Every structure is written in structure tokens, then in C-alpha cells.
Amino acid sequence: MTRHKVEICGVDTSKLPVLKNDEMRKLFVRMQQEDDISAREQLVNGNLRLVLSVIQRFNNRGEFVDDLFQVGCIGLMKSIDNFDLSHNVRFSTYAVPMIIGEIRRYLRDNNPIRVSRSLRDIAYKALQVREKLINKTSKEPTPMEIAEEMGVPHSDIVFAMDAIQDPVSLFEPIYNDGGDPIFVMDQISDEKDKDSTWLDKLSLKEGMHQLNAREKMILNKRFFQGKTQMEVADEIGISQAQVSRLEKAAIKQMNKQMFE
Image (tube, rainbow, N blue to C red; front, side, top):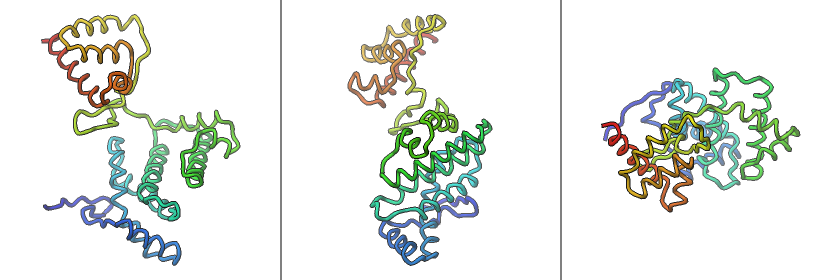
């Protein structure tokens, strides 16, 4: 099978090496104990595929792939320089969050939605403290723990972190089991019951007459009770992916009956 040549930043990605865990461990020992620069270079080159896999998550941001790749490589090098063999975790487990964090910082700094410098400073310091606490305790710290470590009010941390969050599309897929994807909008419940929506609800009720009992129950819970797909799945004892498929099939059937 031939492999297509794809160049990013002048690097032929089809020829990137892949290091096994035992090979990486030996290279880390050489780098950390013998200060071997060539070992560090081998670790970087042997994990560039990891950067490629991470930047695919950001393909819909409209950024140049070359730019994301270079920023991801910075995150990779930081993770290599800070990786602790004594923690007994796979390097990829440690490196992926750091690469993602580096890319998100880059995207935040280039975001057209401007956040005040003081808020960004608090948020970036909070991120550094978060990484420090993770390395120390091997668990995700709470905003309160980060605030105590920094000596600032808990509300300041929450506000600063919220201010630098990237906007997420309602149509961004969050799960796919090989069938229909589940989008962010599928996870949002609607607890509002305004008079302006009664016509839509009436039309929906009319279109539900030809559905079977389970399809009616799913649509009722989703669109009349405002529950998420996960909540519906838990209540009726099936998977969220099944709820998604049944919901989409039922809506398609209703559209066919109502508009043809």
C-alpha cells in the first residue's frame, strides 16, 4: 500500500518515525541522566506524529496547519523537558494535554474576541499552577485549590478561566461510534417554556401520531421535557448513541409525513 506524501513545515509526515515505549524510556534516561542532546532530538522526532494527531482536533478553527504544527511542537518539547519517569505513566498521556494547552494558548492570544490583559495574566498563572498541582498530586485540582495556591479569591479564578475559554460550535461532534455523530447541541437541555414556541410544539405533536411508543417517548422527553440525550438514555436503559439514532430517524419520518 502506497503512502501519500504530506508535507507540514517542510516535514514529510509519511516518513516520520514512531518510537516504542521501551525505546522512549531509554532515550529519556540518556537525556536526563547523561544530558544527551541527541536523545532529546530523537524523542522530538519520534513523537511528531503525536503532534499531528492533536492538531486534527483544531482543523475547524481556520488556522494554518503549519502554524498549529509549530505551536504543537513547542508543547511537545516542553512535555519532553518536564516528563518525569518516576510517575510511571505513558509519555503520550502526559504530553497530549500539554500540546493541547499550548495550542489553546496560541488560539486565545490570536482570538479576535479580546480579553483584558489582567484577566489573561490571572488565567495563565492559574494554568501554570494547575500543571504544577497535577504534577505534584497526579490529579486534576479544583478551582478552589488553584485559588488557594495563588492566594487570590476563588471567584477571580473562575471569572478569568471563563473569560479565556474558546467558543464552541453547537455542531461540533463530541462522539462517534461509527454511526451518526453526537453533537454539542444534542447535550443541551432547554428548560424554557415560552409562549413563542407553542406553534412549534403543536406541529411536533401532530407529527408524532405515526411514531411507535419508544420514539414518542424519546421525543417527548427531549423536546417537551427539555432533557438531554444522556438523561433520556439513563431513564430508558439504552445508550446515548441509540437515543441519537432513534431521535434522528423519528424526526426524519415526521418531516416526511408533515411536508410531503
